[in-house]
Length: 308
Image (tube, rainbow, N blue to C red; front, side, top):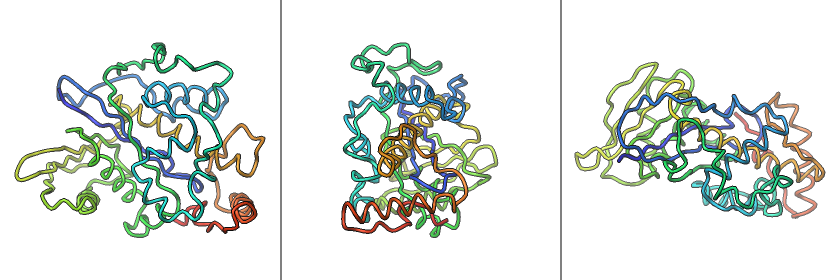
């Protein structure tokens, strides 16, 4: 048996809201990387219609394997939780991941009490429920993301760095990541992620680098403990990556829903975060003003809108 982690991102394109790096860990009986499937990633099943929100939520509840009660409960499982809480002026549970908004958000009227136990209709083609061991993720707020983009020089490099950090936290021997932009080499990002782990026994070996696939091995005292694959169109080739895309999309949407409800309590549809930067200036102004009124603290605009 081999453990595989498929990683995808959500939120690298928008101006507003967090970047979500999600991994789905499975257990396989072979090491064949080419696992063709027909699971559609989040971009293909989500068009911001009401039914799409329900679909995301059903899949999340089914495959996350955790009984979350509020949006804040989801954030509490983020592997970047402590880093965000150290710099957040009022706490993520106040605006970005509200502890006042219960889950589920969009399928309440349908009833979901038995969804985790009996939702066999949500088993996805190409991936059996029993193979999914867990879903792990990182929430990267705009403030942190902007700083790492400045450090790396591009958002694609920053994104890859967070993917590797998530992969290093997993017990999986194989880590499958989608390629970011047109990058061939991920040596720098992996090296810095290893350095971030502060484990001097880990070393990096480059196996191959190309436009379609780049492969790296993480060595510990001469033994291979993990392989990272950066593969073009990975979400079309690996069910773990496609499912990670869907779960990550849901986590981002509930965060945007929380932000939206903070300034528009009656809203049932989240702000997307996509568009021109000046379109979100008014939204950020409302959030800042309301936070000053409610919490007597002013939130920096960099917490709401990405600088880079």
